[in-house]
Image 1 (cartoon, helix red, strand yellow):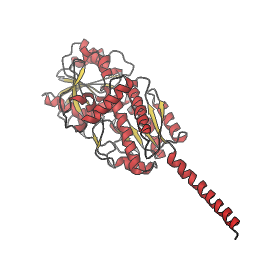
Image 2 (tube, rainbow, N blue to C red; image 1 turned 45 degrees about the vertical axis):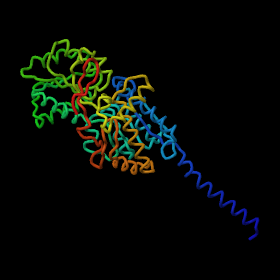
Image 3 (cartoon, rainbow, N blue to C red; image 1 turned 120 degrees about the vertical axis):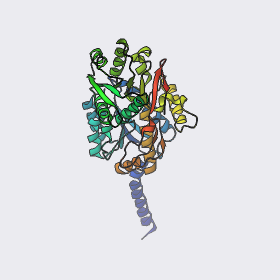
Image 4 (cartoon, rainbow, N blue to C red; image 1 turned 180 degrees about the horizontal axis):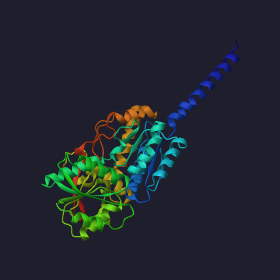
Length: 388
């Protein structure tokens, strides 16, 4: 074989090798596509808006620092307006058209449950930001969540009720997915917690006056405290009506109202003395110096408020946790394959987030225990830590 022929063959071989290498090179440099379906507008916007702002803020920061394993994140966000049918449509679009490798979103329990089958069928990890326990109990292989569950909220509230020497409780619950889920959980755990539910009222998402339900509760013999499972404007209306009726019994809200916006909607005067279980983010500066969450919370709070000009809420914190758990899982897996990524998320241990210290497993797709919840009380328009 002549030298010229050998050179031609060598060039062809090098060319073929370069062509083979191109897809691998492209894969190494291609963006990591992460989806988010959030309720940025609509009745759950006070949840979805800080989630949206948080994801955009930290994706920009991650990309500015070089991305994940050298690849930038491409965040694809859709606004479902709080509508479960729209959420499912967007979930399908993320899977079929946008080709995302993972999903961080699902603002409400209702939208999350509508989307879950789409991601499960596609074997794409889905980290929800909603509260209902049914999202992860029983466990679905590819579905996770960051907030504390409604069952945990009932347990934390009932523990505080008992600590005050009380045991007879009235429920007034929203008929939305979260409200009904938490109502069910409170009914289930009441007996074990030493609580008797003596009244059970409900209200719809469009109701603007809960005076009739609260009047019936006030007239029920033996009520010692009132618990309001719900989120959105409903709990704020309940709180205002409660004050207007002059009811002096302890009032508990859920972690679904854990933001300064709730206090403003309810008015600080009406909200005075209301208690709720919440993530420590609401009281970050009140935590002891040796609390493992304290610095993480202060750093997130500072970054969010500086970037947005808005007060921090636990709901944006849920998005921070979901994104960071996913990013760390991608790093550990060194892959965006759905099953490998799922396994890496399950292996999350000792992650210090805004919701608590997360330790997941194959049978626990949330990884928080009751100690992650803090009991807070509204005093003079501010959240005050009253217990661990």
